[in-house]
Image 1 (cartoon, rainbow, N blue to C red):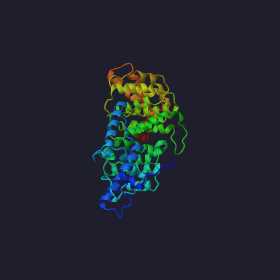
Image 2 (image 1 turned 30 degrees about the vertical axis):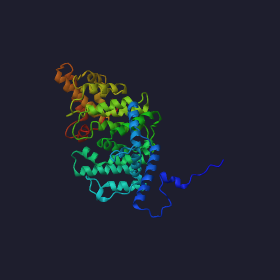
Image 3 (image 1 turned 90 degrees about the horizontal axis):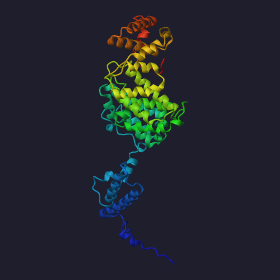
Image 4 (image 1 turned 180 degrees about the vertical axis):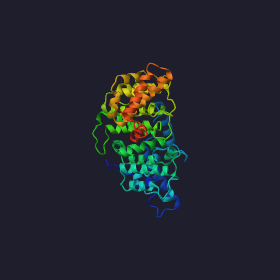
Length: 420
């Protein structure tokens, strides 16, 4: 049986206008043709990119029902921006890999167009010349220019610059975010997290940490260029924790945010993993230093957060840090652990000369804080012994105006990461 082909004229009632009309088409016919093609194109895109939502199943069902009913009816102009087809097209057109260098007059309001690094960044991306090291240099340049203008409200102004979002869009468009190997570049990992926090994109950094945590057993300790490793996990975790209390700020901030961030990170990381243990230990030791040696002027932390922080550090084998933290408990400081630590190390005065300068600083601060605590509580039995120990350490290190090197060391803010 031969199936007849419908005549071309039958398409008149479809989406095509009559093709035998003489060209060019008049304005009305051109508009009808455009609308027909647009409608057909949208129907196909709607079929390929259906509506999606991150809500719960119940909300998702209701949303999809409403979305379907809207797609079948005429939508007002204000609603079309929510169509998945529009989002899909907008994502294609805004892909930084297809972008041309922006007009000099369209630069950011914060950076002058003539010196703006954004034009250089856009040009390098569009030409395929952007690398992780260049992206790190771009962010460092943006921050340097902002600091040169004024050091005030630097985090707020970093957020207004949009530099972090530019790099993030490039990472996603180039597919580099899929493997997270870009975090293997220490320079980029160090500068991008502050920008993400400043721009309200901190959940992106947490998402990276969660993905690295899921791959913790695969992370190697050896450094391979362009590949994430155990140090990548440690750097990212440390950067996130720092940003939650702005540890790099010249003003002393409360450490509650960092304590909470460390607890959150510790909860999402797998146990009994060398890479995870190293990352937690590094961040914990850094916070321990900020909570003791660098505690002057800081507001007292939350008791619950502080005690939870101390509990996280108990399995890490850092007795010096734990003894010092007991002296800095926000509501119930005690000196017993510090005295026990010092008494068990009777040669500590003689050993001071062989210690690294940072460890010398930590031990001396422990002795000074213990002596202050004993004097405050009137512990006449222990106080004289600690005072003699302090004097012996002073003499051993020859502290005074003639020993500038040790004096500079005692003003250092670099944390101790190993107990004595």
